[in-house]
Length: 346
Ligand code: ATP
Ligand code: MG
Image 1 (cartoon, protein in one colour):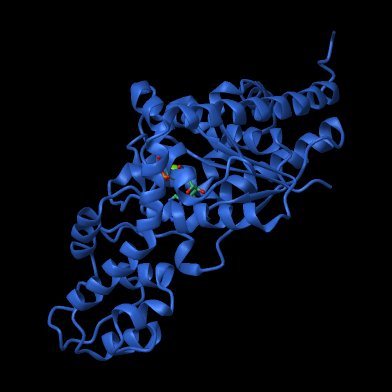
Image 2 (cartoon, rainbow, N blue to C red):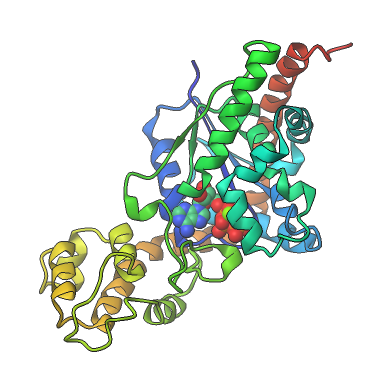
């Protein structure tokens, strides 16, 4: 069986360090592993419109921003197809048929949808399109016959729901669709990176992000303003590292060599944590270290982004080419789907 990746992001803003550790880094690793026959990276503009119907210009403009962030992180257009979701109308078509295989109650039980409905104040009036986005996401994944979906933890219920649709479709219409697997980051701290405000998830919609394109002074300002352990008031107080965003970020980003380089008094992260827990280590010192770590991680990404920013027509060409390849694949799957559903009339 062909090994195929499908994953993507909503063009609702620039990408942030949560995306990087939760999904982008893994994508680049898989891209370079040589184990995949096809890789599709989707800029999900149609999905972004489900809760941004009144802001089409915002979605349009962010398509380029997300593409630049991809290239900045090292996604290689020679190895992956970066494409625009709405330019592959077969995905919409497929969603329409999948809707017959899912109940309203089942979508209502999806924990990610539940959280997002609350977050977006949609309780009283949820747009139908937004409510059904897990179904359209199943169409996105299956249209490419994806076997692997590298994503953050918030996507687990989505892939679960997709698998149910695959099984239902195959049992009703005959073996047609491919069953996908989610691939989460190995590092626990990267599953769901919290926001700089300490909220459970760094998210474009929550405005609590460090962006991949942030300039060094913005990164520093954000790190120095980060939420830590609220009970760690004086330097000598014992502090908590569990649930403390500054330490979660260090868990996600710190490499052993950064201690030699920036904080030689400590051998490793465990020593630093132990000192914080005992008391006697101030937040400012830890934040300054985190700032240096993030600066070191983000500098090459920012530089590569600037290089691509200087050749936007080339980026547009990459999107066009990727979309062409993606559409051909989706059309192919749609042919099989129509045949299985007995709607291939002529
Ligand atoms: P929005 O607020 O518009 O939903 P978002 O910041 O949640 O934006 P998405 O485009 O929905 O970002 O997510 C894209 C991918 O990045 C998904 O695979 C998701 O799991 C991952 N991701 C997003 N935020 C985080 C995070 N804070 N930690 C780890 N992974 C994340
Ligand atoms: Mg999201």
